[in-house]
Image 1 (cartoon, each protein chain N blue to C red):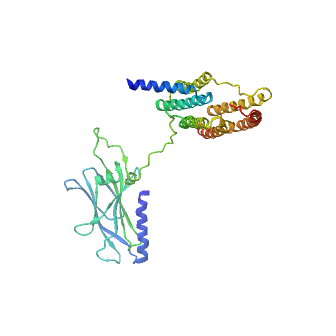
Image 2: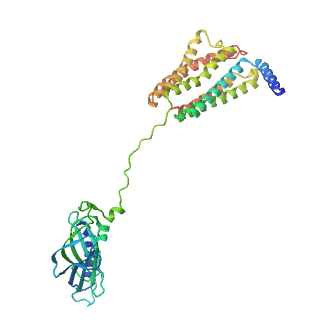
Image 3: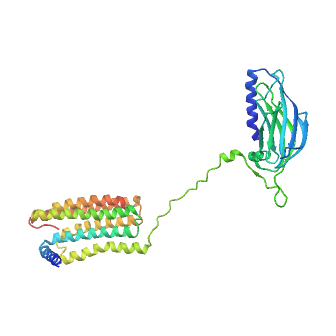
Length: 109
Length: 298
């Protein structure tokens, strides 16, 4: 019982702390959750139905995972950089995403 | 006749070697006796052959044995001459298949050839009918092999229920050794088992759902497009984003129906246009950022 209440406390404190995070970081969080969720759904599909276009599965899955990783690293960079960060990090993020998409594009066919 | 060819070749080679190495003498046969023996050993039929063109008419059924006795002599050779090759050949008239029976040394001197019915069947398979019998004798010490036709042998098999002879089933030992390999049929790759289209489409929608959820969440968090350039720089920025969207749509088309050769030219055009507008947009953004340093662009 106390464990559950502890857990609730943790969650509520996390929620109240999270409320104060900047909107941009929230957006990045939402996007990384979205990417991860898509990857998980594709994996579930591959497990349930079959990996028939296997290269397409690889492209989709790893594209999502890669996007998640890149977004998380962007978030870390932005959150630790404070006000000094911005376009420069976003430029690097865009370049990395572009490379990822080119790699994934080779697998889509 | 083709089956006799190896023997003739062997005889010819033997003759060639013998002719070079030793004296040339003619082989003569004497005391050629053809007997048909019953299973009990009693003689059913007996003939003496004196010349190379005898016209015997023999009958050989599955209980009987054909036996040929002969004595060979070499002109100018030893008294105890034993030819290196002495065979009785039975050639089926219908198919031309031949069975060979080698001669062995007989007890009372001379040579004896025994042609058993089952040995015949082993060599040529089941082939009831008339066979031509011939006696072949060759040796390296003689230039000329001897071939005596003995006549015809009627070969009978155990009759079937209606009294008729079994159907011919020719068989050659060579066929057993060299059987044709099973035919290799070209096989196309089996198509993979695929899920019904409905399931796949449903999962496509499910996989797209997080994206929609993200848009909703972003709007609720408070995302906006206020950072989007307005006024004179709106058009290049809009064209830049439209170009990106068009490239994404092209990827989708590429995956669905286009091939690489169709996709690349379109991609090249879209890429150049998008890059040009992107450069204009970013130049404008950089200029705006330089004018208002504390403000950050999205």
